[in-house]
Length: 388
View 1 (cartoon, rainbow, N blue to C red):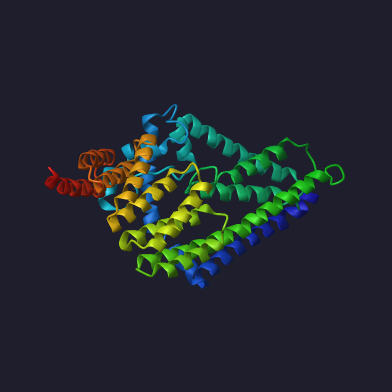
View 2: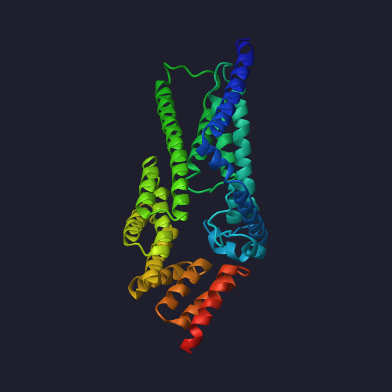
């Protein structure tokens, strides 16, 4: 009787909260110009990019449907499965570290058995959440809250990286459901389980911190995009650097914003050879590398920054430094065409056209149909002609 009496108000409260969240998000996007621009400018290219990656992920899985390719292998195999036409019709990247979909990631890494096991786990968690919600008192909204959070996390992971940076929250929520289902039937009294309430409050505090951090990330992302747009428009580096640091200050714990400062410096150094931009970029990339020691993308950008400085100033010293970086990267991951492309350009910069042509031929063979690599090879061959 008690549960039935609370059932209707509970459903009404959940519906009101859901509608309020949607309305608040809609008003925020319409009322805040920066958020409106952020949402409207990131749809078409992102959707096209993901469709290409998902198509390749399907082909990757079909080639090894039972055992998959192993964990963290998608970056290595993607260039061989990327649709040839994508390089010719768009600016889509030639390498991708993850399918940006948790189910496809499991299928590519572990085959269809792994993907089915993941779906079974998620289905079991959803069923457990429903069972717990029915078994608890009508005024107990915790199962619904956990279920909604789990659904939101999984929805995000259907379009985003499935990595250690993005999946812990889903693992925590799955753990909540398992623990709740394993507990005794009936209400849990505070007198017997006071520690459980303390833990719940601590977890709620963590989630609150994460919510505030998310607001900081969104604001920092908007500020960073504005700064990068100003940089692309030819704004002076001191002004751009100040905007970048201001945006970074909104989320100082996130190393990718530090990394973005280094990437922005690459563009300025390439066009002007600005010493201050190079110094700021080198400092930012060194800091990003300390925070992300296993990410070869940061190492690549460190080498590319040195390469751009050397080319802009016609200084062979930073070009040799860059070449050494790219040699290390190609040895570590010989299936990444971008590494071979950069290595070939660096080799040409120090006058070794034989290696340059060989490196660029490797890049072209790894990314058939990519116009960027093909034109780079043609340009280097033209430069090498007088040398022979």
